[in-house]
Length: 413
Image (tube, rainbow, N blue to C red; front, top):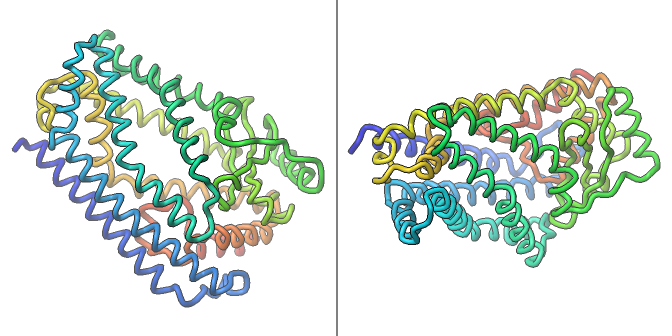
């Protein structure tokens, strides 16, 4: 067995083992604290809601552990098990030109992987989410979303895939730099198009109507010096009762989006505080930093792929006997997350740091008590766990634990 193959198996085993262990710790923590609401939340969250949140998180963790094992098994089947090599050979029998051979092989594999993951998605939506009262998606809407997603993948993804494979074959030794530039351009185009073209394919957006809430939103936008294409309400209730708010788009296409489920639960002053937090991400350049980091990581990734694609051992080590551009692209996309898994806590730490900074920004531009009250309502209504395991949270969570976050807000309010 090649050294690279051995390292891959060891890294995959480590990743599965650590993630399973962390999920088990989280499950124990959630269950151990199921019977008592943490004192800072006792006045706002009934015990019944806390118990429901614990059961909901336990169900999702159990499904997540199953998904973890299935994903690892599928990865081994595709690589060392010869799944990709077999599919590649079957497509090769069609005698397509090399470029379209690569596009067809990767597209078919992506479709097969989606089909394998479909039962878990169905179970999550129509069993777990429905059991705890969150799901509002009908089978017809679920199927329509799948068709729309497939259509977007065909219209946007296939041209990008074909372009990258063509560059790998025709652009010489620096193909990876040109491919990275194409990736960045694609990302920016999608960011501009998403609010106006893509998102409306899945949800309806209406301008926030005039009234006290609109005045509160415009007031906080003026205080923070933020200009947007508009403030819109999204019909998130079509699919779920979870509530949220977010920014989307870049440049002049920026939009503020409020879920209709969020507006049902929060007072105008609380919505204003939540928006102040989100505006903090913009004013503190968090969005730009994350975008630049993603582009930088992609540059490093393409550079490493440029080296790996020239090494025959890269292919044979992962069960592919015949080197090709599309095999290199696929193997790199599947294998690199296994080796970069230990970096996950750094990304989570950086994200939580941004959340604390955005909270402090919100305290300077809105009512801190309203922000704390809004977050408590969101924790309650979204069935978020108030008692995460410290190691699990440090590894996985992009937001600070509820107790620590509320304590920081109340201290600064």
